[in-house]
Image (tube, rainbow, N blue to C red):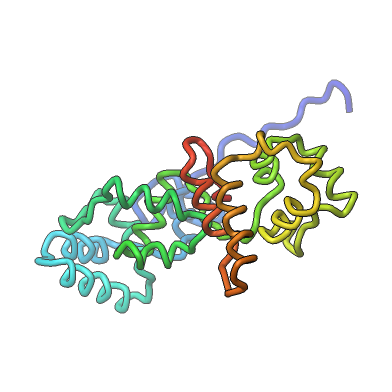
Length: 244
């Protein structure tokens, strides 16, 4: 009804909480911090924090540190990343770090999106967690895709997406089940419809490597992994990358 002001319920009548706070809600008997803690999957106590601090301060080698962390995980049934995250919250670091060199970072940038993080970590001799953290810090897209996206093809041919859509409607360029343009489809397009392409606008490193692959396949019909050379040539161009 108009002119009738709603009745304010006022502040709740707080009650003491088990943690020592005097601002617990009467319905649950818990304060805001304890209520949030009840929804957490992993609960840390002074004892667990002491064990984590001991693992970081008393370890004599990387192997010893790994064993101490593994013992904490087995005692509580927690995965390793929970221990690392809690240590980061506590401000703990170990002295057994393997710093990333410019060569390793360049390798990660080159192959992110074309190789799995697990494989990149093995080739660099690093852990998966370290490789994933470095890729996240560099804001790299690490999901491995096959072929090229619509944006990739537009950048390769220096065309607007509307022209690419027109080519697709004519059946000149088709996508696979995942909506990607395969390297073989782009090669067929270059071979069959070169009259509608301005070769001067195509990315030169990618074009050279693709034509080299096509010529090599004509000379010998041996098995070849198509697309890797062209993709790496594209990634080596300053300011251009096909890691999606």
